Length: 301
Image 1 (tube, rainbow, N blue to C red):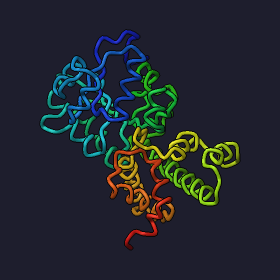
Image 2: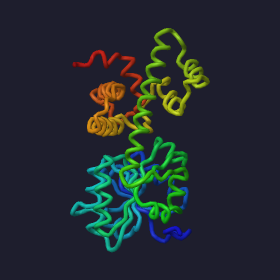
Image 3: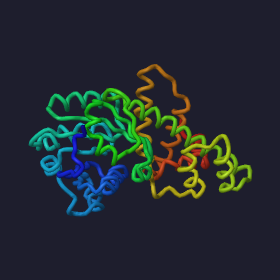
Image 4: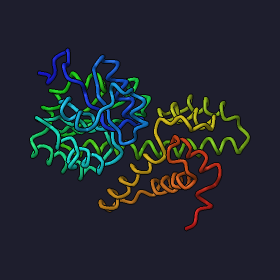
């Protein structure tokens, strides 16, 4: 049985109103669900309007289910457990659904701590860009209690109709990072292939179409290819800073596992060159420019 009736009587909380948070709100709006949102940046709250903006205290007392779309694992813990966090103001049991990409080991401990505190926690990192999430064609990766996931099914059907239960808390983040590793390398391969063809004199638009019709075609190519060809990155679907955060987690986990990731190391250096140029908030398709400018070659050892 679902945890929710078809006509939800309480609003859904959304904490973190960046690209993914705004897309979550679009999904809630599409499902005609009421919501209250909070972000540490007041300008982000302006996007949802004063009547839907709220403090963490108000969200904790007005909502039973809260979606977390914050930047990293530390922000997840602070949002929940800080002296002015959600649990400090809760009048009853809250259900936190974490859509952030987090450190798998830390998020598992957070899930345990949440349950000890008398609340509920579902891990739900999203595989897909913010635009894909807004359209409802992303993949939600669920980690934690399958029983809780089933009870949340009415809400999850609205947020991410396509979803997969991975396993205990932490496993969904592991799967998300493995996906992000492959996606990042796809972006780098596409950027390198386009640069190669352009330097040989091929028209970039025609080359992209040829690649899309070839055995090399991928979902990444469909989404990021046009951005690379147009060389326009100022309307990001996924940002350089976010990608570097995720790849930092990937590199740390690989090191702990004794695994060499030589391609990931190159990818990280290419994106770091764009971070150094002040492009943290641009779309990660800008890796095309790092290759175009030979930035890896020019970096200090």
